[in-house]
Length: 195
Image 1 (cartoon, rainbow, N blue to C red):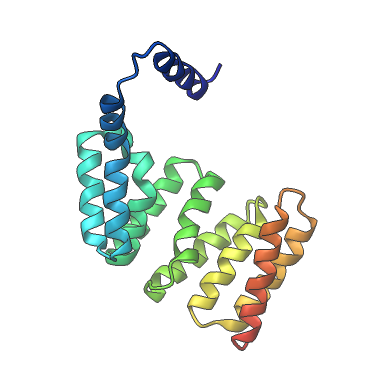
Image 2: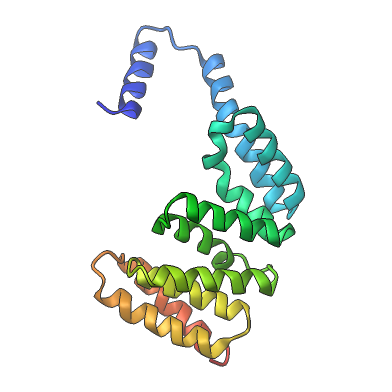
């Protein structure tokens, strides 16, 4: 039985035995959810300095939690400290021996954030180009590159990469049908924008 299933079985047995402590469970849940909720609120309010401080404070209290908060940290840095974002991204990639998952996480930031500096999009494009050399998840990286091209106002490049993403996704058995539909919709948006 996995950890989650074992935990659920324990809780269910406590409920059956009328020994489940709702107050303690609520407090435990608040410890887990509360910090993320505060960070999410700061991010939604575009208080990236505040979000970064919350993350850094949490990591200082519990260094093992750094990996769980990495995406928050990188999103905040991409908005307020580009050199630190780029340096941290390079360190993360190097520490992971160039793991494709690290490229995916880091590229997803400039691909999904529409209010960043052109320098961040250009850096993100360089990461996409590196990731494409690995010949893994190509449709995903092409799609992220197209999004960055679009954010840079390079509509013809966005269309080119969007077409390549669709073509690659159509032959990749790992691409979910809903994601292929998403890629096609994005391609139409890039074309409509003047690509």
